[in-house]
Structure formats: C-alpha cells, structure tokens
Image (cartoon, rainbow, N blue to C red; front, side):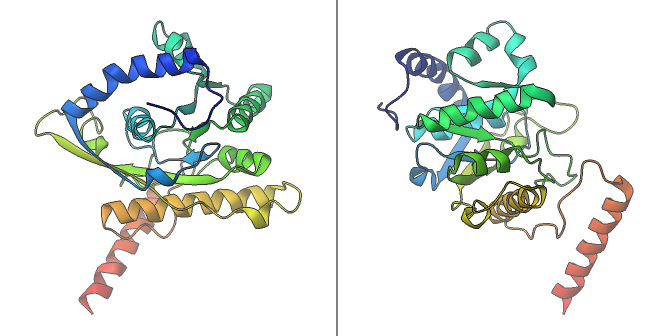
Length: 259
C-alpha cells in the first residue's frame, strides 16, 4: 500500500508493515473499529488526540496507517529502553521525549523535521492519561501549540471513544467479552493563522492551547452524544473543588432539561 508523502525510508516502511501485520489482525479480533473523516488529513500535519487508555497509540496509529499515513508519536523516552519495543520505536522513527530541559526542545526539533519531510506527528496534548473522572480531555500542555506555531503545520484533532472499555479502569485488565467497539474521528483543522502573525508569547501559547482543548472536547462530545464540561479538568487543581463544580454543573443541566 502506497503511503502518503514520498520521503519515507524503505526501512521505515518495512518496519511499519511488519508491525501492522500483527497489530491490525489482533485489534480486529478484539474491537469493532469505525473511522470517520481521516481521509482528509494531509501529510505534514500535527494530530492532537485524547488519551483515555493505554491502547490509544495503537488505536490511533492503525486508523492513520489504514489511511496511508505513517504515524510518528512523541513518546516517553523510557519506552525506548524496553527490549524489542525500543527497537521497533527507533526503527519506525518515533521520537523520544525528555520532560523539561534541553531534551524537550530537541524532541520538538525532531518532530519539526518529520513534519518538514511530509510525515505526520501525533501528540497527546495532556501529556498523560486523562485524570478527568469522566474521561473528558483535561487541561493541555503547550507542546502541541508550540510545535504548530513553530512549523506552520496544519493541526487536526483526531479523537476516539470506546477502547477504554477494552482496557481501562481499575484494576487495569483486558475485558475481551463482549466484543467492544471504538470510533476514531477526525475534526476540522484548528485555526491558528491569527496567532502566527506575531511573536510566540506565553499568552499566544495559552490561547493556542485553549483552542486545542476546546476542539478536542467538543469532538469527543460528538462521539459520546453528551454535553462537555464547561471547564476542563485541571490535573494540578483541587480535586474536591473540581468534583463539587462538576456536580453543580450536572445538577444545573438536569434542572434546565426539566423545564
């Protein structure tokens, strides 16, 4: 299958194909997968996605691969030290991320190079599995916004829902039966042109990051058929205060529905 973009090495294409020959049949056995809107994603794009399960990278990567795109993730540097897994990550051109210091800057520079070659970069803006008790996207870090503003690359939300039923919750275990279903859906490109006209100040980064969070939130809401929270969950905020606010918000909506 020809891949979008013409600058991929033969070794990368072979390794992706080899991994896909195992991953795709396995996912097909465990999950019914539905993909919506991914055909419009261009080479050289930044993909931002929600993070609800340890299976997410495979779910999103397969969906993009099925649409002739070779996905690259910004992945935790510790994963590259795991035998076999680390070798596959390196062979497929995944990018190790060191939190903070010069390592973070080097990771973004490596991601910019991939985009420049027409590759696709996938970022979880939250930086970790969501801590939101209802699994909504929570407050994002600025890395995805910084990369989008630096490269002028299109940034597209690709969200999913359902795989957390297969692997998620506590304790973490696979729940194979009954067979689960997941939907992966791409949204429209997030408008950033007005933020690219001046310097990359903190306020500009915050606004760009806010737009990313809002687009992801409303796209997930479409998948779930629910209203999203008014304020995204803060991983550093007071948990009890946030739970109280969430309950008040739910109560207010129920009262409005009664009217």
